[in-house]
Length: 209
Image 1 (tube, one colour):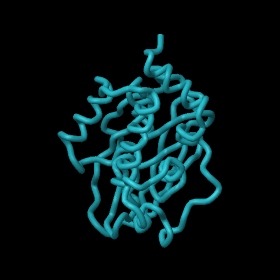
Image 2: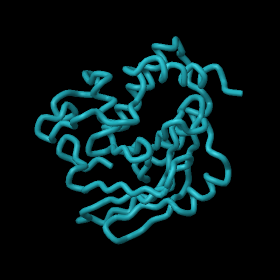
Image 3: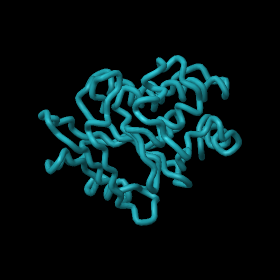
């Protein structure tokens, strides 16, 4: 049975398109020159802008699922805003235990990992064990030609209904491309690739991934 909070989140996503992170990107992402994330601080971002950053931006793509680099600072800021707005809409104040697990991981390992967040349309609230095992074996990242396996993952939960994959952060300097080779549970043809040019992953003049 779904918890009351998770059920409310699912109903909210169906009933309120303005508050549901999109699984199809808006028609046009801004160029780096006029991007809102460069012109305004996170406190001034709108809901539509946050939706755009988490679906179609230097840090996000949509291909079978909504995939973004959750460890990148702008994506992290967008997620925190989204959670705040969702809780305000639902009238929820407290932090939930499953949400605290991920936050504790971030506190213990600041800047040590690349974290990939995945939101899959029409997926089961929790992927089955077989698919999660396949995801662990087949998901990896590439920094140019160097490959790294997934270290851990955080499954979707009532407090944080997004699948998160944890990979090592092994930048040596001078890399040109970050490629995600992911197995997306619950997706037809689940093996999907996502390429991110390193030079585009900049926020306020600094690398952000």
